[in-house]
Image (cartoon, rainbow, N blue to C red; front, side):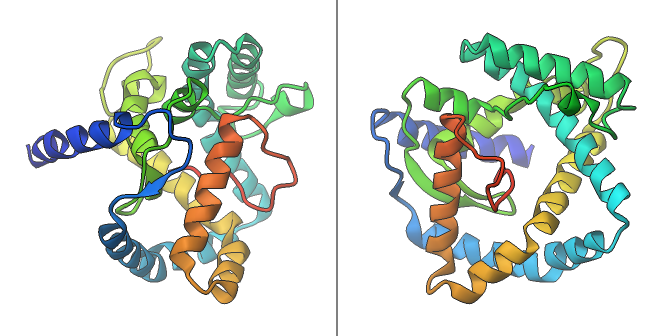
Length: 247
């Protein structure tokens, strides 16, 4: 009930800041004081929980890490299918659908990635990116608790993702799809493992950024906004030092 009440308060604010200036392509600081306070909380959470877990995860044998990363990435592709369709990118619909089917079967539930060897390379797409392809600007920049950097557009997109993501439908919404169903624990477990995997992969990048940044808040903001812009343009290079900077 509390979550529903909070959504009723937060969602109108996000929508207002998102659509007041939809043509603006530069994110503006509308809540910097609040965002910096949330950022401090997130950094404390990272120091106490996420970083130690990520460092422990990095000590696992590489095959286990690769399998875990492949598994979570395969599930994430499900969200790319409807978004690629909404963007009118039929080629990516084919790549995403084919990759998921191949990896879920031949790749044993996505633990292995034979689809990549077959030339299937789907982009990860979400509602925030889809809105961006339609010319909707990022709106206000903000930092979300635990989830980290975001914008008004991407925050709205996070909520909208749960309505079109097949994985969300069979887990947090507990609908059955092709005889498969799950629950909240399945959804948030996968999201949690995805976050740990990302944090572990970018551990050295975080350390370098912390060491060399005069203002870490501003540095992470810059990295996030540039990453989102690259994703909207589908211009991420394979040799990018950072992985997928997703919430």
